[in-house]
Length: 93
Image (cartoon, rainbow, N blue to C red):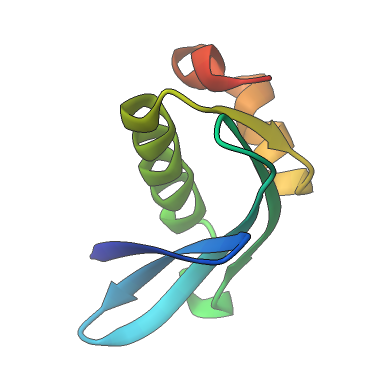
């Protein structure tokens, strides 16, 4: 699985791909130089429960650490993951 992050204007996304097919996407809004807001997560139904959403979130967390920015998770999935995972809370706003 490959995860591609792209930003256009005030929006960004991280998309998981397998064999060239999109299998999940997490979108976010850029709320300034030091803040992003995770808006939504979608994973193709056949990939539910296989860790795709978690891997996408961890890719965004990695990007946030590299850019020294914080995250506000509005998406219910991302909110739940931050609640469960101590190792990523350092990027929470």
